[in-house]
Length: 82
Image 1 (cartoon, one colour):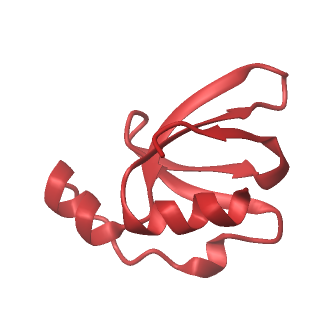
Image 2 (cartoon, rainbow, N blue to C red):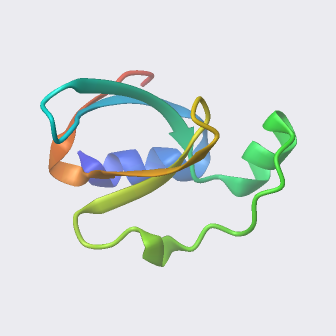
């Protein structure tokens, strides 16, 4: 499922949920599509480097937190907006 999340993050804004280290469920809305983020949200982000997605870790720009975040691939619960 994590490959699907990364693919979706490249294309658009994705709402998804994952389990945090403390066991809580976190809902996030994010993307890695820099051009779209800059245009739609008026940001000035630089190019996303795919290598920030290390083995087992997916990095994304969290629209609500206004910062880069990451999650362990195995912690993904679901992609909400299909």
